[in-house]
Length: 554
Image (cartoon, rainbow, N blue to C red; front, side, top):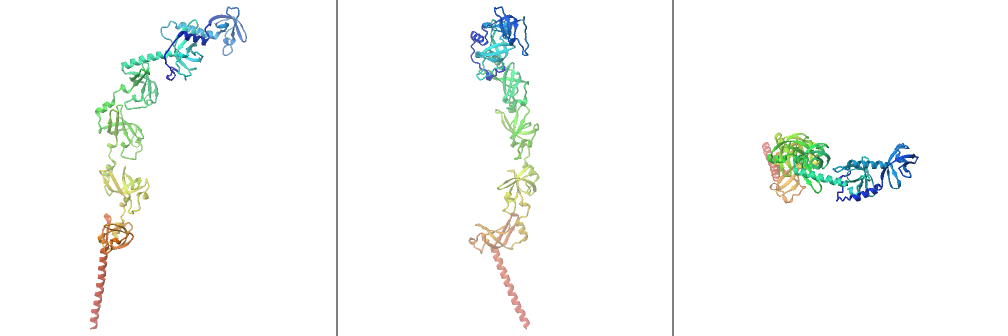
């Protein structure tokens, strides 16, 4: 339809006053008193050709009228030519040719019972309308019947219009683009009604593809298949499925009588897979699907019946650090998934891949037990400790389990990516949590201390903390001991301050539990026993010496 694009069509009420239109045509073409006349060339000069037309004075014809584009004269003296005779004896050979073509066109079509539509080119514009040329024949199209919007610039562009008046006497041809478009609109309206009333499946040809859908033509009617009406899978990119010229089966789903538009659907011609899904599937079912497409946030899986399910990235695997589905899946791969969400009305199906896989914790728990030493990688550092990945599962290495030295913590000791050796100290099956310890690989300072000391040994320590139930003292680096309140005597608990040095005896040691108890009271009693022992020893020696001396003197 050329520039009869919808943006350039103005289909208002048509008022065709033919007499007025012809009058405008005559004015624009200057043909009101023009007629065809045959004459004989009697003389040719460099500027004119004198032609005998049966009047007292020969008519002057501009030499350019009978000269071709190469400068060659088309006629010679004595030749007869047909001219168009106008007012005041003006003649034109070229206009005579056009008039003859117009006259021949009129003779060929004047008895036609069918409307005459022509495809032509808009070659010019005058005050009354447009000049349209088709097959060498000139037509006049009044502005009122052009149906162009104000902003349109039709000159130089092709159009299709309907012949509404032919005047053989003047060789005048009047066109109406509005009449043609109204006729087309009427035919289209009737065709749309026929298609809609029939409600049948139609064979259509893909004409144009857009990002929002594609235009197809069925039985002469062009309409839109919106991208949501192509597949039951949901919105799709039509360019990935079709190309111009493809044959598709469609059905009319909507018609707008006001706008004379029709909407087609491809998916309406196919069984609704969601009805089958509603009847056969339930949450918790396991189904086999094919990975159809992947995005950063998950994957779409094909159920094999023109329906798709969604597999969110969080449902692909137990690894929380998964960045993209392609790290686990590949397009075209067939997998088994569990149905975890089903909304038939909104046609949404959510599935899980990880639910059918053994949890990493379960795998780890089968291979390892508490006390096992494993190697892992630091994946994250927090204020409270570090996370260590071992065999695809992460466990916590708490600051308290990093080292025996309380001043050392995870951020101080490690960096993300470091490989570490740790011991398994907790497997919580209810919460699926694992706890690791690095300090468990080394002897604790208390264990070392216990090997060097025995119960009753005298030690000295610096008071680190004072509680209601006793006093904590630091006796070596990393070794703290408790002196219970009842064991502080003869010292006064209220007078003891942090930083004081206290001497005491080892009352008990539990290296496995990291406990050492001291007793000042026991230490004092031991001192008393030692003093008495020392005194008794001195007394015995003095008495013996005396007796020995008395025996010698006798």
